[in-house]
Length: 352
Image (cartoon, rainbow, N blue to C red; front, side):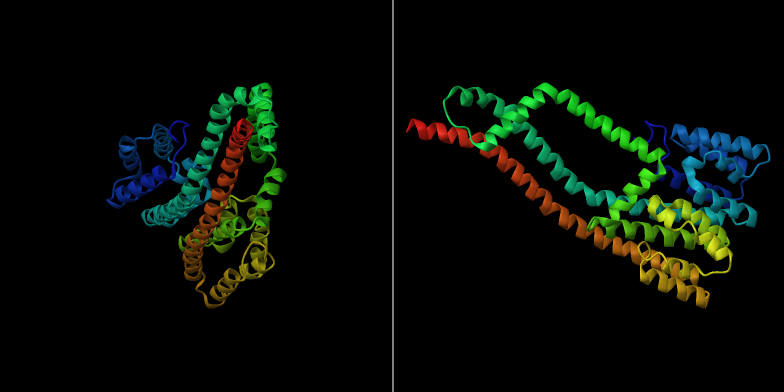
C-alpha cells in the first residue's frame, strides 16, 4: 500500500538504518555505503531518496543535512539521532539505536492493528449480513407482502421506509458520507483547532482514553530516553520529543516543557502540572531519575512498563468491544428478521 502512494514504510526505514549501520561499521565510506544500499533497496521511493542523499554527501554535506530535505518522511527524531552520531563520531552506534527504536515502534503499531482485527471482522460481517437481508432478501418478499391486505408491523414499515429512501437518495447519501469523511480528514490536517478538538475528545471516551494515554506515554518515555542516550541535551531532547507526539492535545500540553527546563526547572515538576496527560507514576519515577542521575534508565523502565500496560489495555479493549459488537450485530439481524418474518406470520395466521 505504501508503495502505491509513494510512501516509505516503517519496515523500509528499519532496513535502511540497519544496512547503513552494518556497512559503515565495516569501514566503508558513507558515500559508497549509500550506493550499495540503494542497489539493494526494492522501494522506488526510498531508492530515489538514497540517491539524493548520496549526491548531498558527495557535495560535502552531512547525511543529516540531506535527510532534512525529507523531513516529512523521516521526522525530527530520526534526523536528530543521525546528526548527533555524525557530530560525535558515533554514527554506527546511533544507527543501531535508531534501528532498535524503529523496531519497537513497529511492534507497538502491530499490537494496535492486531487488537483491532477481530472487532473489524465482526463489524464487516454485521454490515454484510444486514446489507444482504435488506437489499436482496426483503425486496423479493416485499411485492407479496404489499399485495395482501395485512396490517404491517412497525419493523416492516421502518424497513420499507428505509428502502424507499435508499432508492431515491441512496447515491446522494453515499456521496455525502464520503464527502463528510474526506472533509473532516482535510480539516483536521489543516486546522489545528479542529484536530485538537478531536484529539482531546478521545480522553472522554471510556476504555479508549486509557489506551491513548498508554500509547503516548510509552512513546514519550522511549524516545526521550533514546535521545538522552545518544548524547542530546535534555533541553533539545524535550523539544524533539514534543514534535513526535501524534496526538495534538499531548503535543500542546508538552509545549512549555522546553522553556521550563531551559530556565532551570525539572521536567518532573512540569509534568506534575499536566496531570490529565501524564500519570503520577511517570512523574514520580522521572523525579527520582533526575534526583539520582539515572534519568535515562528510569525512562527506559517507564517505556517497558507502559508498553506492558498497553498490552493489557488492548486486551481489555478488545474484550469490551467483541461482546458489544456481537450484541449490536444480534440486534440488527434480529430487527431485520422480525421485519421479514412478522408479516409472513401475520399472512399465515390470516389464512388459518
